[in-house]
Amino acid sequence: MTAHDIAHVELYTKDALSCVDYFVDGMDFTRVADCVQADRSSILLRQGATDLVVTSGRGTWKFLDQHGDGIADIALACDDVDATYAAAVAAGSEPLAPAYGSPVVPGFGDVTHTLVPHAPDSAKPGWPAGRRWVPAPQAPAGPAGRIRRLDHVAVCVEGGSLPEYADYYGAAFGMDRYSAEYVAVGGQAMDSVVVRSATGHVTFTLVAPDPGKDPGQLDAFLERNGGPGVQHLAFLVDEIIPAVGEFRDRGVEFLSTPGTYYDLLGERFADMREEIAELRAGQILADRDEWGYLLQLFSRSPYERNTLFYELIQRQGSRGFGSANIRALYEAVERDRLAAG
Image 1 (cartoon, rainbow, N blue to C red):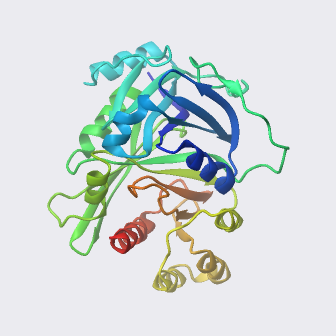
Image 2 (tube, rainbow, N blue to C red; image 1 turned 120 degrees about the vertical axis):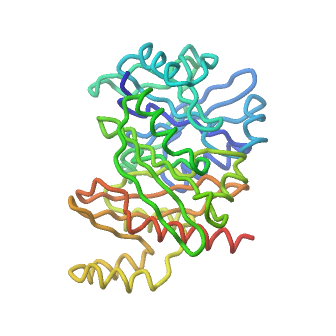
Image 3 (cartoon, helix red, strand yellow; image 1 turned 90 degrees about the horizontal axis):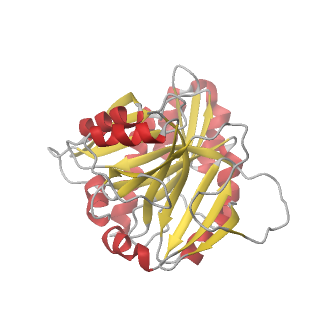
Protein backbone atom coordinates (compact mmCIF):
# COMPACT_ATOMS: atom_id res chain seq x y z
CA MET A 1 0.00 0.00 0.00
CA THR A 2 2.63 2.47 -1.10
CA ALA A 3 2.29 5.39 -3.52
CA HIS A 4 5.40 5.46 -5.72
CA ASP A 5 4.70 8.31 -8.12
CA ILE A 6 2.14 10.70 -9.55
CA ALA A 7 1.04 9.02 -12.76
CA HIS A 8 -0.80 12.07 -14.08
CA VAL A 9 -2.74 15.11 -12.95
CA GLU A 10 -6.13 15.92 -14.48
CA LEU A 11 -7.27 19.53 -14.78
CA TYR A 12 -10.92 20.39 -15.49
CA THR A 13 -11.40 23.60 -17.44
CA LYS A 14 -14.15 25.61 -19.12
CA ASP A 15 -11.87 26.59 -22.00
CA ALA A 16 -9.66 23.71 -23.09
CA LEU A 17 -8.05 25.55 -26.00
CA SER A 18 -6.87 28.49 -23.88
CA CYS A 19 -5.71 26.13 -21.14
CA VAL A 20 -3.72 23.98 -23.57
CA ASP A 21 -2.23 27.09 -25.19
CA TYR A 22 -1.05 28.26 -21.76
CA PHE A 23 0.91 25.06 -21.19
CA VAL A 24 2.07 24.45 -24.78
CA ASP A 25 2.86 28.02 -25.84
CA GLY A 26 3.74 29.35 -22.38
CA MET A 27 5.51 26.44 -20.70
CA ASP A 28 6.63 24.32 -23.65
CA PHE A 29 4.52 21.23 -22.95
CA THR A 30 3.86 18.87 -25.88
CA ARG A 31 0.38 17.82 -26.94
CA VAL A 32 0.70 14.03 -27.02
CA ALA A 33 -2.80 12.60 -27.55
CA ASP A 34 -6.52 13.40 -27.61
CA CYS A 35 -9.55 11.49 -26.35
CA VAL A 36 -13.21 12.26 -27.13
CA GLN A 37 -15.97 10.71 -25.00
CA ALA A 38 -19.73 11.14 -24.82
CA ASP A 39 -19.68 13.84 -22.13
CA ARG A 40 -16.11 15.16 -22.18
CA SER A 41 -12.94 15.57 -24.20
CA SER A 42 -9.39 15.23 -22.90
CA ILE A 43 -5.98 16.34 -24.13
CA LEU A 44 -2.79 14.72 -22.81
CA LEU A 45 0.16 17.09 -22.38
CA ARG A 46 3.66 15.95 -21.45
CA GLN A 47 6.99 17.46 -20.51
CA GLY A 48 9.78 15.49 -18.89
CA ALA A 49 8.15 13.06 -16.45
CA THR A 50 5.03 15.23 -16.02
CA ASP A 51 1.75 14.11 -17.59
CA LEU A 52 -1.10 16.63 -17.48
CA VAL A 53 -4.59 15.76 -18.73
CA VAL A 54 -6.75 18.77 -19.66
CA THR A 55 -10.45 17.85 -19.70
CA SER A 56 -13.59 19.83 -20.58
CA GLY A 57 -17.20 19.12 -21.48
CA ARG A 58 -20.56 18.37 -19.93
CA GLY A 59 -19.16 15.74 -17.58
CA THR A 60 -17.00 18.37 -15.86
CA TRP A 61 -19.67 21.05 -15.38
CA LYS A 62 -20.66 20.11 -11.82
CA PHE A 63 -17.03 20.34 -10.66
CA LEU A 64 -16.48 23.60 -12.56
CA ASP A 65 -19.63 25.21 -11.16
CA GLN A 66 -18.46 24.42 -7.64
CA HIS A 67 -14.72 25.07 -7.94
CA GLY A 68 -13.88 26.75 -11.23
CA ASP A 69 -10.93 25.60 -13.33
CA GLY A 70 -8.76 23.34 -11.21
CA ILE A 71 -7.21 19.98 -10.50
CA ALA A 72 -9.91 17.30 -10.24
CA ASP A 73 -7.79 14.14 -9.97
CA ILE A 74 -4.23 13.22 -9.01
CA ALA A 75 -3.57 9.68 -10.22
CA LEU A 76 -1.22 7.75 -7.94
CA ALA A 77 0.96 4.87 -9.18
CA CYS A 78 0.95 2.25 -6.40
CA ASP A 79 2.90 -0.94 -5.76
CA ASP A 80 -0.34 -2.79 -4.92
CA VAL A 81 -3.51 -1.10 -6.11
CA ASP A 82 -5.93 -3.41 -4.30
CA ALA A 83 -4.08 -3.11 -0.99
CA THR A 84 -3.88 0.68 -1.32
CA TYR A 85 -7.58 0.90 -2.05
CA ALA A 86 -8.34 -1.27 0.99
CA ALA A 87 -6.04 0.85 3.18
CA ALA A 88 -7.73 4.07 2.04
CA VAL A 89 -11.18 2.67 2.86
CA ALA A 90 -9.92 1.42 6.23
CA ALA A 91 -8.52 4.91 6.89
CA GLY A 92 -12.02 6.34 6.56
CA SER A 93 -12.45 7.25 2.89
CA GLU A 94 -15.76 6.51 1.21
CA PRO A 95 -15.51 4.18 -1.80
CA LEU A 96 -16.09 6.01 -5.08
CA ALA A 97 -17.16 4.73 -8.48
CA PRO A 98 -14.22 3.42 -10.56
CA ALA A 99 -12.95 5.61 -13.38
CA TYR A 100 -11.70 4.16 -16.66
CA GLY A 101 -11.44 0.73 -15.06
CA SER A 102 -9.33 1.88 -12.09
CA PRO A 103 -10.37 2.28 -8.44
CA VAL A 104 -10.81 5.82 -7.13
CA VAL A 105 -10.59 7.15 -3.57
CA PRO A 106 -11.20 10.63 -2.13
CA GLY A 107 -8.35 13.06 -1.60
CA PHE A 108 -9.33 16.52 -0.32
CA GLY A 109 -12.55 18.33 -1.10
CA ASP A 110 -13.76 17.05 -4.47
CA VAL A 111 -10.24 16.14 -5.64
CA THR A 112 -9.85 12.39 -6.08
CA HIS A 113 -7.03 9.87 -6.49
CA THR A 114 -7.25 7.32 -9.28
CA LEU A 115 -5.09 4.33 -8.32
CA VAL A 116 -3.00 2.74 -11.06
CA PRO A 117 -0.22 0.11 -11.04
CA HIS A 118 3.32 1.35 -10.67
CA ALA A 119 5.36 0.73 -13.84
CA PRO A 120 9.08 -0.07 -13.71
CA ASP A 121 11.35 2.92 -14.27
CA SER A 122 12.65 1.23 -17.42
CA ALA A 123 9.18 1.11 -18.99
CA LYS A 124 8.37 3.58 -21.74
CA PRO A 125 5.89 6.30 -20.69
CA GLY A 126 2.39 5.27 -21.68
CA TRP A 127 -0.94 7.05 -21.71
CA PRO A 128 -3.54 7.06 -18.91
CA ALA A 129 -5.30 3.71 -19.12
CA GLY A 130 -8.96 3.12 -19.91
CA ARG A 131 -9.44 5.84 -22.53
CA ARG A 132 -9.29 5.68 -26.30
CA TRP A 133 -6.41 8.01 -26.96
CA VAL A 134 -5.61 9.19 -30.48
CA PRO A 135 -2.02 10.39 -31.08
CA ALA A 136 -1.82 14.13 -31.73
CA PRO A 137 0.03 15.40 -34.79
CA GLN A 138 3.64 15.79 -33.69
CA ALA A 139 5.34 19.16 -33.96
CA PRO A 140 8.93 19.26 -35.21
CA ALA A 141 11.34 18.08 -32.52
CA GLY A 142 12.93 20.94 -30.60
CA PRO A 143 15.21 21.27 -27.59
CA ALA A 144 14.18 19.47 -24.41
CA GLY A 145 11.75 21.43 -22.25
CA ARG A 146 12.80 23.12 -19.03
CA ILE A 147 10.44 21.14 -16.77
CA ARG A 148 11.74 17.81 -15.49
CA ARG A 149 8.88 16.59 -13.30
CA LEU A 150 6.26 17.58 -10.75
CA ASP A 151 8.15 18.48 -7.59
CA HIS A 152 5.18 18.83 -5.24
CA VAL A 153 1.49 19.68 -5.06
CA ALA A 154 0.34 22.43 -2.68
CA VAL A 155 -3.11 21.77 -1.22
CA CYS A 156 -5.25 24.22 0.76
CA VAL A 157 -7.60 22.67 3.35
CA GLU A 158 -9.80 23.97 6.14
CA GLY A 159 -8.26 25.40 9.29
CA GLY A 160 -7.69 22.81 12.00
CA SER A 161 -7.85 19.84 9.59
CA LEU A 162 -4.13 19.30 8.86
CA PRO A 163 -3.59 16.43 11.33
CA GLU A 164 -6.57 14.56 9.89
CA TYR A 165 -5.30 14.82 6.32
CA ALA A 166 -1.71 13.97 7.27
CA ASP A 167 -2.90 10.88 9.14
CA TYR A 168 -5.02 9.82 6.16
CA TYR A 169 -2.16 10.04 3.67
CA GLY A 170 0.07 8.10 6.01
CA ALA A 171 -2.43 5.31 6.62
CA ALA A 172 -3.73 5.06 3.03
CA PHE A 173 -0.61 5.66 0.94
CA GLY A 174 2.36 5.05 3.22
CA MET A 175 3.41 8.72 3.19
CA ASP A 176 5.41 10.23 6.05
CA ARG A 177 5.20 13.67 7.61
CA TYR A 178 8.29 15.50 6.44
CA SER A 179 8.05 18.96 8.00
CA ALA A 180 5.66 21.47 9.55
CA GLU A 181 5.63 25.28 9.50
CA TYR A 182 3.59 28.08 11.05
CA VAL A 183 3.73 31.52 9.41
CA ALA A 184 2.14 34.70 10.78
CA VAL A 185 1.79 37.81 8.60
CA GLY A 186 0.12 40.73 10.32
CA GLY A 187 -3.15 39.48 11.80
CA GLN A 188 -3.23 36.47 9.47
CA ALA A 189 -1.50 33.10 9.84
CA MET A 190 -1.16 29.72 8.15
CA ASP A 191 -0.16 26.21 9.19
CA SER A 192 1.51 23.73 6.85
CA VAL A 193 2.46 20.06 6.91
CA VAL A 194 4.42 18.24 4.21
CA VAL A 195 3.65 14.58 3.53
CA ARG A 196 5.93 12.63 1.21
CA SER A 197 6.22 9.10 -0.17
CA ALA A 198 9.30 6.99 0.54
CA THR A 199 10.34 7.41 -3.12
CA GLY A 200 10.19 11.21 -2.79
CA HIS A 201 8.12 11.39 -6.00
CA VAL A 202 4.77 12.07 -4.30
CA THR A 203 4.85 15.18 -2.13
CA PHE A 204 1.85 17.14 -0.88
CA THR A 205 2.34 20.44 0.93
CA LEU A 206 -0.84 20.81 2.98
CA VAL A 207 -1.63 24.39 4.04
CA ALA A 208 -4.50 25.74 6.13
CA PRO A 209 -5.50 29.10 7.62
CA ASP A 210 -5.30 29.55 11.37
CA PRO A 211 -8.99 29.88 12.37
CA GLY A 212 -7.95 31.95 15.38
CA LYS A 213 -6.51 34.73 13.19
CA ASP A 214 -7.96 37.26 10.76
CA PRO A 215 -9.21 35.89 7.41
CA GLY A 216 -6.54 36.05 4.69
CA GLN A 217 -5.60 34.66 1.31
CA LEU A 218 -6.11 31.01 2.28
CA ASP A 219 -9.61 31.79 3.52
CA ALA A 220 -10.18 33.62 0.23
CA PHE A 221 -8.95 30.58 -1.70
CA LEU A 222 -11.32 28.26 0.17
CA GLU A 223 -14.21 30.62 -0.58
CA ARG A 224 -13.39 31.08 -4.28
CA ASN A 225 -12.61 27.39 -4.72
CA GLY A 226 -15.73 26.23 -2.94
CA GLY A 227 -13.72 24.30 -0.35
CA PRO A 228 -10.36 22.48 -0.23
CA GLY A 229 -8.37 21.99 -3.41
CA VAL A 230 -5.03 22.25 -5.17
CA GLN A 231 -3.58 25.72 -4.70
CA HIS A 232 -0.58 25.22 -6.99
CA LEU A 233 1.53 22.71 -8.88
CA ALA A 234 5.31 23.04 -8.49
CA PHE A 235 7.38 22.10 -11.54
CA LEU A 236 11.02 21.13 -11.04
CA VAL A 237 13.53 22.75 -13.42
CA ASP A 238 17.31 22.48 -13.69
CA GLU A 239 17.93 26.19 -14.33
CA ILE A 240 15.24 28.54 -13.10
CA ILE A 241 16.68 31.86 -14.30
CA PRO A 242 16.57 31.05 -18.04
CA ALA A 243 13.31 29.12 -17.54
CA VAL A 244 11.60 32.16 -16.00
CA GLY A 245 12.94 34.39 -18.77
CA GLU A 246 11.68 32.06 -21.50
CA PHE A 247 8.28 31.54 -19.90
CA ARG A 248 7.84 35.31 -19.39
CA ASP A 249 8.64 35.87 -23.06
CA ARG A 250 6.00 33.25 -23.89
CA GLY A 251 3.34 35.14 -21.90
CA VAL A 252 3.38 33.50 -18.45
CA GLU A 253 2.89 36.09 -15.70
CA PHE A 254 4.72 35.70 -12.38
CA LEU A 255 4.10 37.30 -9.00
CA SER A 256 6.33 40.25 -8.13
CA THR A 257 8.81 40.28 -5.24
CA PRO A 258 9.54 43.54 -3.36
CA GLY A 259 13.09 44.89 -3.44
CA THR A 260 13.28 44.73 0.36
CA TYR A 261 13.25 40.93 0.08
CA TYR A 262 16.56 41.00 -1.79
CA ASP A 263 18.06 43.48 0.66
CA LEU A 264 17.35 41.01 3.45
CA LEU A 265 18.55 38.14 1.28
CA GLY A 266 21.89 39.91 0.82
CA GLU A 267 22.25 40.15 4.59
CA ARG A 268 21.46 36.45 5.05
CA PHE A 269 23.60 35.15 2.19
CA ALA A 270 26.61 37.48 2.04
CA ASP A 271 28.47 34.93 -0.12
CA MET A 272 25.85 35.13 -2.90
CA ARG A 273 25.99 38.81 -3.91
CA GLU A 274 26.39 38.18 -7.63
CA GLU A 275 23.74 35.48 -7.63
CA ILE A 276 21.34 37.72 -5.70
CA ALA A 277 21.66 40.40 -8.37
CA GLU A 278 20.50 37.84 -10.96
CA LEU A 279 17.69 36.66 -8.70
CA ARG A 280 16.54 40.26 -8.16
CA ALA A 281 16.41 40.80 -11.92
CA GLY A 282 14.26 37.70 -12.34
CA GLN A 283 12.21 38.31 -9.15
CA ILE A 284 13.21 34.81 -7.99
CA LEU A 285 13.10 33.69 -4.35
CA ALA A 286 16.03 31.89 -2.70
CA ASP A 287 16.58 29.85 0.45
CA ARG A 288 19.10 27.42 1.85
CA ASP A 289 18.89 24.43 4.17
CA GLU A 290 21.41 21.95 5.53
CA TRP A 291 21.55 20.17 2.17
CA GLY A 292 21.82 23.06 -0.30
CA TYR A 293 19.99 25.89 -2.07
CA LEU A 294 16.42 26.27 -3.25
CA LEU A 295 15.25 28.76 -5.90
CA GLN A 296 11.57 29.30 -6.68
CA LEU A 297 9.03 31.63 -8.28
CA PHE A 298 5.24 31.58 -8.45
CA SER A 299 2.98 32.40 -11.38
CA ARG A 300 -0.13 34.52 -11.33
CA SER A 301 -3.26 32.39 -11.71
CA PRO A 302 -4.42 32.35 -15.35
CA TYR A 303 -7.96 31.34 -14.35
CA GLU A 304 -11.13 33.37 -13.82
CA ARG A 305 -11.52 32.54 -10.12
CA ASN A 306 -7.85 33.29 -9.39
CA THR A 307 -7.30 30.03 -7.54
CA LEU A 308 -4.91 27.52 -9.13
CA PHE A 309 -1.45 28.81 -9.99
CA TYR A 310 1.99 27.32 -10.71
CA GLU A 311 5.51 27.33 -9.33
CA LEU A 312 8.93 26.85 -10.87
CA ILE A 313 11.47 25.39 -8.46
CA GLN A 314 15.19 24.62 -8.77
CA ARG A 315 16.94 22.46 -6.20
CA GLN A 316 20.68 22.69 -5.73
CA GLY A 317 20.86 19.88 -3.21
CA SER A 318 18.00 21.25 -1.10
CA ARG A 319 15.38 18.82 0.18
CA GLY A 320 13.20 21.43 1.88
CA PHE A 321 10.49 23.81 0.76
CA GLY A 322 11.92 27.23 1.43
CA SER A 323 10.72 27.80 4.98
CA ALA A 324 11.98 31.39 4.86
CA ASN A 325 10.24 31.83 1.51
CA ILE A 326 6.84 30.71 2.76
CA ARG A 327 6.35 34.18 4.24
CA ALA A 328 7.41 35.80 0.95
CA LEU A 329 4.97 33.60 -0.98
CA TYR A 330 2.17 34.34 1.48
CA GLU A 331 2.79 38.07 1.19
CA ALA A 332 3.07 37.96 -2.62
CA VAL A 333 -0.23 36.10 -3.04
CA GLU A 334 -1.88 38.43 -0.51
CA ARG A 335 -0.67 41.51 -2.46
CA ASP A 336 -1.98 40.00 -5.68
CA ARG A 337 -5.32 39.18 -4.05
CA LEU A 338 -5.78 42.70 -2.70
CA ALA A 339 -4.74 44.26 -6.03
CA ALA A 340 -7.31 42.14 -7.86
CA GLY A 341 -10.02 43.23 -5.44
